[in-house]
Structure formats: C-alpha cells, structure tokens
Length: 200
Image (cartoon, rainbow, N blue to C red):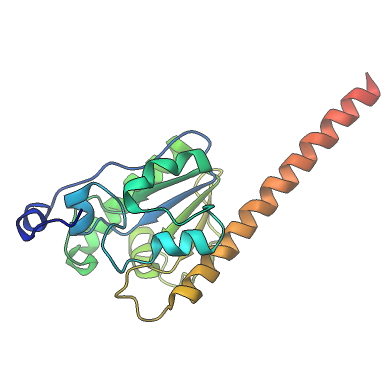
C-alpha cells in the first residue's frame, strides 16, 4: 500500500526493525532506511529500488519477493539490517559521525548474530563507516570475527552507475561464493563422518 505524503513526512527520523534469524548465510546491510521503509516497516520498500529484483535474479530467492514478504528471508538464510538506523529521504542526509557510530554498532551486531557473510550495500557508506578509504566492490580483506565482509553496489534507483543486470551480477558473484562454501563444508562433514565410520 502506497504511503500518503503525510505518512512519509511522519516517517522522517524513525527506525524499523531488522530482519534476522539464526544461522544466517548472508546479512544484507543497507545504508539506512528511506522514508517509504519508515512508513511501511519494510526494507527497500521504495518503488524503483532494485534490491528485491537483484536478490531474485542472482539466485538468492526462488521468486521475486515483495518488500512486505521480507519475513520469508530468514528461512532462506538471509537477513537485512542497516549501517545507520535513522530514516531519511536521502542517504546523504546522514553525517559521517552517524555512519561511523553505525559501523561500530553493526560490528557488535555481526559478532552477536555471526552470519556467514555481511554484505554492505554501498561502497561510500562502507568506506566512511569502517574507515576503509580504498575499499572496492567485492570481498573485503578484513572480516568481522568469523564473518566475511563483502561490499555490493547500492541498489537504490538513484545509483545510475549500475543497471539492474549489473547489480544482479554482483549479487550473483556473492551467491556463488556462498554456495561454494556451503558445498565445501558439506563435503568436509561427509568426509569426516566417513572417516569416523571407517576407523571405529
């Protein structure tokens, strides 16, 4: 349901709940919620945001989910959070201090949730929040605890540097890396069980 102008104005500077669960494969991290998300309580809710189409095209979801179906993500091993919790009309309304504070809070959240991968959606926000001025899109050399950190492009429709196809391709690279890790872990577990059976 489309928020009214009054609802959008009222959503300024509010917060929305994260989408999380146990044993997450990927915790996607937006920069901060927009006004549509603040008004609806759904992440990446604004029409024109490419997050949900990119998630589907890359193979993370079996079908194209709507923002209001975000509750289905944890069953797929996926979650959503944000660097900064405050809703704004545009991400550039956030201060550098807010992003740095958000990065510290995000680090604590990741250490608690322990997802396999944290995927930050926005290179500029990542550089500021974590003090990595030379960071590039893709897997980062520095993780958080046992969690790998990846940076993907911002899926906002305002990000003209990436088409939906190019965005989905970056998501696909991450999905294939996660799948490869899951496969190697399963193979190692099977080999371990076989070895135990042989030696007992």
